[in-house]
Each structure stands twice: as C-alpha cells, then as structure tokens.
Amino acid sequence: MANYLQSETEMTLQQVQEQLIRKGKEQFSLSYNEIVEKLDPFELTPEQFDAFFERLSGLEIEIIEPGRSQSGSSDIPKKKKGTGWRAS
Picture: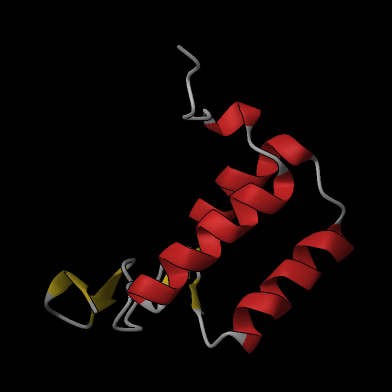
C-alpha cells in the first residue's frame, strides 16, 4: 500500500508555499520565523523570499515580525522608569 502522505522534506517548494498560504488565510497571519523555517530547505534567494512575501501581502496575510505578537505589541520586555521590567 502506497503512503500518500508526504513529509515536508519530500514536498516541493510550491507545495510548501501553498501550505503556508492556506494556513495564513485561516489565521490571517503567519510568523516571519515560521515562513523562513519552512522555506529554508529550498535555499531561496533574497529575491525569491521577497516575491513570496509580496504574494502573501497581496493575499492580505499579515507577516508577524520576530519579537512582535499578533496584537502588534512587542514581546520584548521594556523597562519603565522606576518600576522595573515589564512587557509592553
């Protein structure tokens, strides 16, 4: 019996991109780190990464930058004068 499930290493670049797009449409966003992690095995050029990010943007899928939460606030603690460290 053939195994019809493909592991990520057996998937083509197009399949991985379509998988990311489906997830992005469901969640309305993707993390930058997740995109890079999934596309890293394909050794894309900076131009290819840019083209994919532009495609996501055109589909209104938000890219969550490292150090940012989906609400847009920073996950990096900041020091407020006189009160010690706090997350913003």
